[in-house]
Amino acid sequence: MTGFTPDAPVLHEIKNHGEELTKAEAGVAAFAAKRNNRWYPKFHIASNGGWINDPNGLCFYKGRWHVFYQLHPYGTQWGPMHWGHVSSADMVNWKREPIMFAPSLEEEKDGVFSGSAVIGDDGKLKFYYTGHRWANGKDNTGGDWQVQMLAEPDNDELTSATKRGMVIDCPTDKVNHHYRDPKVWKTGDKWYMTFGVSSAEKRGQMWLFSSDDMVKWTYEQVLFEHPDPDVFMLECPDFFPIKDAEGNEKWVIGFSAMGAKASGFMNRNVSNAGYMIGTWTPGEAFQPETEFRLWDCGHNYYAPQSFNDGERQIVYGWMSPFVEPIPMQDDGWCGNLTLPREITLGADGDLHTAPVAEMEGLREDTIDLGAIDLDFNEESTVVEDAEAVEIEMTIDLAASTAERAGLRVHATEDGAYTSVAYDDQIGRVVVDRQANAQGDRGYRTAPLSEAELAAGELKLRVYVDRGCVEVYVNDGRQVLSSYSYASEGPRAIKLVAESGTLKVKSLVLHHMKSIGLE
Image (cartoon, rainbow, N blue to C red; front, side, top):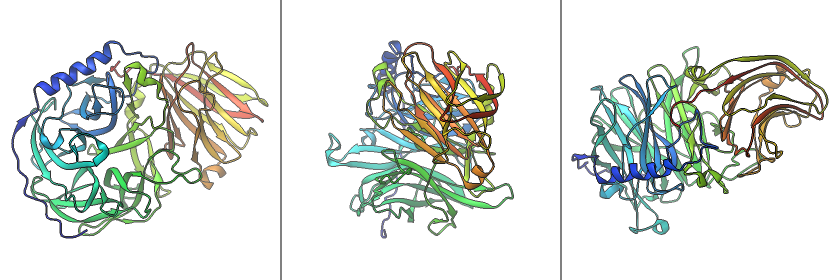
């Protein structure tokens, strides 16, 4: 794409207070007053009521962590987007903050869409986000009309902001409607912005802009075009440098690919969030050196966003309920985020995402169950009722003969459960919901490398919340995040060996405390 010169931004000051925010807060409160907590998370971030999706505006600013998220305060399905907000001084205890953004300007009258936060050279924070309108003025049958917007917080607590207006318009003749989700960073003495685009030819792209003052932006080039012609849009793009333990730097490009076809174990979700590792030099396009790899292999993961806190690259994802039925929608809320994960570049040349160290602060106790052996087709109850726990388990693969072995979580008296297991026939870790009584079913798998299989040992770190499961494989080399709607009654966790024996070297259980958002 050539020849696009953005119009000069027309900035103004619109205080983001008023009727729209008051109505939105009332909408959330109405849902919260009658919310059913049977699956409402104890230690994952969720809205008090209503629908949420993408994490937005992630930052560490003036001593507090801030997580914003897409919010529809008037329903438990997707609708006109607002920005919800929670904050924390320690990433363990969280506080609800006022809703940050509601649609109020013409450019965003149908939704304040996703965006990011960045701290400028003056030490002050700026929000960049997408303003959304329906092209026909009423619904999605005529497509989207999307532009990039700027807002600045009114205080260090980030509890309100002033909208400054549009900074990048959409060249509608060069775009097939989709044009959103800005990510801003600085390299050298220049600021850069990228966001997702569906080109006029319906190819998924990320465009690159640059700026000297963070206000007036100049189009540079297509930073990346997805090689798969089926992929028509790259949502929630991410772009950042990362160094391995030896100090070697690579660039990571991340995006949620819309349109990719399922193939074998790959791309099984409606849309799939992943990354490529490569190199980038300002003035050039990104050069990938790897194939597209999933951030998370589970049923419910999408729209991740990362940020750097000065020492670590941290990512949150949205546990997206892709497929009906979605029973939590009947409970006054829908959707939660994953735990925060630190992104590292391993000696194997791949990215690893393990829970940030602060998550250990959620442990209320530690119960060391030691080594456990199971005979053919044997099962053993680890705990009779587990509402919110973390399990650390090491399986001796070399000494186990089971075809499938591992945990059954959310195991209830009606026979329902979710399986978290190693499957020896395919050499993968599996989250299987075939026995769930409610919600979507199916299974997802995470691969193990030849080196991991040859090591003869498998480490699993499993977080079980009221309505979801996160499984970290071998210190975050792979992750699986899935909803799991437990049936009524006690929710046991069982250790199971199927068609063979199981030798567990160690099993440790931690009860988890609330993060304070219930």
